[in-house]
Image 1 (cartoon, rainbow, N blue to C red):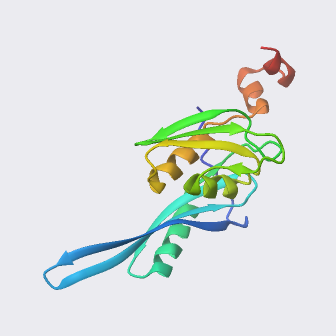
Image 2 (image 1 turned 120 degrees about the horizontal axis):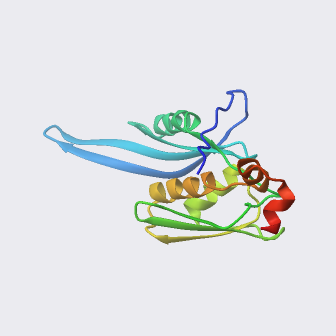
Length: 170
């Protein structure tokens, strides 16, 4: 697996999506102390995606921190004609995801946390299934891991030192 951590310039336009927000209560001697954590996914809808977690006393501040964290954690993903290049599975903790290419017009067939990641990347047609844990944090991480492990035919041919036609012939 090649490392797809992208050295992406800061001038690209990233759109953020809020995946999950969680209220956390810490009980102290002085009473209940409430804070919020926000899981955010950012992407340019053209093959770049990242996720971030922000924690703060207010929801808006937590989301802002999550967006800043996500911008530091970007990955480049191959997108071919609005879908993924091949089938891929990945696990993160208790969450397992399965992503499969789909024909044009299918749409994004995926659950909540996976849908946010796939749409942020710019994938318009895909079949996806989440197995195991439905924890949004683990689902987002497993989905980005699966997308990061994908390789297009040009990359495979370059790594093997052969032509693109030879990749498909076997």
